[in-house]
Length: 455
Image 1 (tube, rainbow, N blue to C red):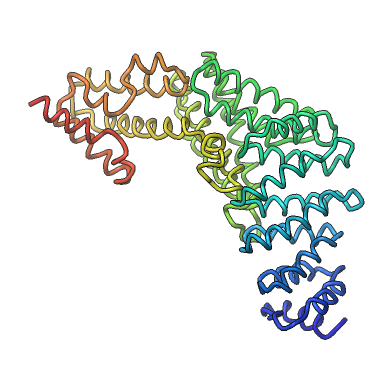
Image 2 (image 1 turned 30 degrees about the vertical axis):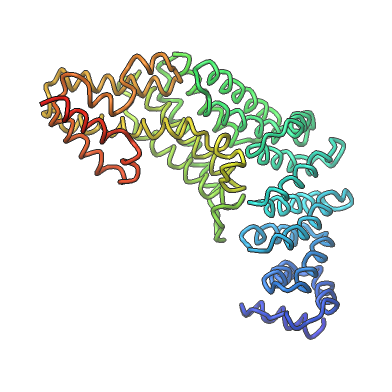
């Protein structure tokens, strides 16, 4: 081993940074050749990219394009996403990584990590995302099955951010590949989840949820174990029962199984001993795991004594947490307003509904804790209107929503409710929510209107 290679290995073992700016590209390539079969290769590539000169960056791209070891490419994928590089370097690296991904002579894991790394570099770079799309369209179903399984996952990720009918058909073709079928079905199921969350009416919601249900069943049938698909399926079935009005007595056992599975699965998602950036594919698992655990915790607190109310609360919790889980697992490319993510990954409809439901829920809790603020019949009427408004929003029923006071503002402005009590409720809600959140609602307008119209 050359002096420079030994110097680099020793410096790495001591946790010291090594300045590579003074070395020629030929010398750096020679060192990389010596480290090719060692665990230090990925760290050497990272050091080259961190140095940031033309020579070191070009050398890094050249080295990456020659990697054949799955372990080394896995390490490249781990550090590449949070590492800051220029657009020019990102393009050069991605070209090398896509060559690795497309080389059928390499191990499927090396190719898969190459594709993952190339996708990392597409974050917030639309032109590089288009390159990934083009590369995925060139993949054929006669390729290695294990590699195609990873391709299906990446295709699903990309489709969560951009509309691409050709790529969607590619994902449907991958369902027919035995080794990739479960991953392709799961990806299609997640896309159906997004569609359900963004649905504007009950029929569309039910169709999309049924789509999700079928795809998750296919994913489970195509694999020995698919804990994630089974968990989504259990949640979707509760939502379907609620949407169809099949409020049977089995909710308790359903929620128990979801709770246990969600806690177990969240434990698998949480990283063990390495810090992960939240806005990366791997780091997204951390946030996803937290939301699954949150789902389990919230379901555990439900009061199941009143069947209809229990189903309403369960549907609300599951829908809201699924939206957050989906965002965590698919927000890999950032949240660009013109990139489709606001309409697909984070459906605007579900966000606005969640915000209004939170306000309605806060008002309901305030009325429960302050029953003396108004005559009992009026408090009961208002709490009934709150429950009806939440149910109408969950069932995506515009007609029913229009038939009840659908917002906190209209409920507070209803006849028979004392103006001074409405003012107290408004103040309490203002303390509950941030000033910015409160300012974006029509609560203040409702209170001021009541003050002008009633004595």
